[in-house]
Image 1 (cartoon, rainbow, N blue to C red):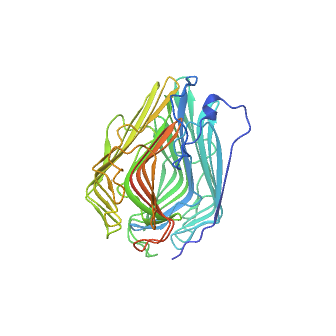
Image 2 (cartoon, rainbow, N blue to C red):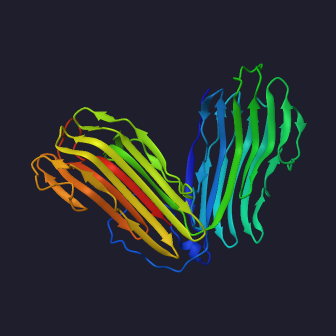
Image 3 (cartoon, rainbow, N blue to C red):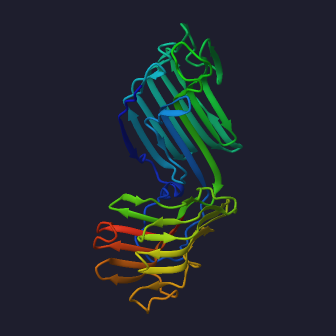
Length: 423
């Protein structure tokens, strides 16, 4: 069995009059360039959080993923009401379980009316060696804010030329129509999962639940044409961010990926602290730590947005004790109330910080301190990168200019990292 897919993605903004909600930038996890930060006032605006996603096919054989989501798209969680994305893929080849032709997907957000929408179209569908066939399967999902709440729609969902076991099925089959497949399992046609503020549509959902003549493993399932839309709000904005203990990177390639990362959901945590904790990181004499605790906390309401991320790293030893600290804590906090953004790294700290050959460097080191280490590289301490709506704290960052401990020049070592944004 094999899979074969090619894809292309395009992203654009629709040409229409921009509203305040449409001018809010999409959340980004990229490192912000250093800039002065202060409370920034703007007109208070009622916003909504948009979610939309789509994919063409996904397939599991038994408990093993054999084909991930093809032509996948997602808007994530954003307050930007002026987004349009498209994607496409050549198709899926996973006989005898599933074969398809070309796939196309779209996701959109709209400011007026307030709406999120998505679609997925999959051509030339054949499941279980032709037991299930369709010329095309298209799923459409939209969620619109109305005066009475949220309106959900699957209008546009069609099942063209659908034939199951030799019998034709209506192109507009009722939601959640179940068709039993003797000797295999069952097929759900126009599967719809509804929530108060969101809708998931799967054009076809095949489940293999019994041993069969084709030898397809029990538990196998295929989803064809998935479309999801949802709205939340009104909200004062959305948050984002993360924290992690350590990482080592060389020119975009992870030598040691972020350790014990915690992510801040865009609609917060209802004020509850979520954490990810690990016992230690041990990379020879390059980097050693004790316990790492990374946390995220946030709250989103119609009037206020707050977010906070922290990373606390114990017993840090870097490059054979070149840099040491008993405790390193990074703290990134953001908020937005009545249109005013506030960002801060207050609470970030060192306990017993020492840098070999630099007795003047202590736990009270000033933010954005830079230390030249001859034959090694540049050490940044308590690095704070701010924008009006975000703060990124890197308590220790060592960029090598010479090979050290088997790491090439250009390697980037970080300890105690926290990022928070509000939009």
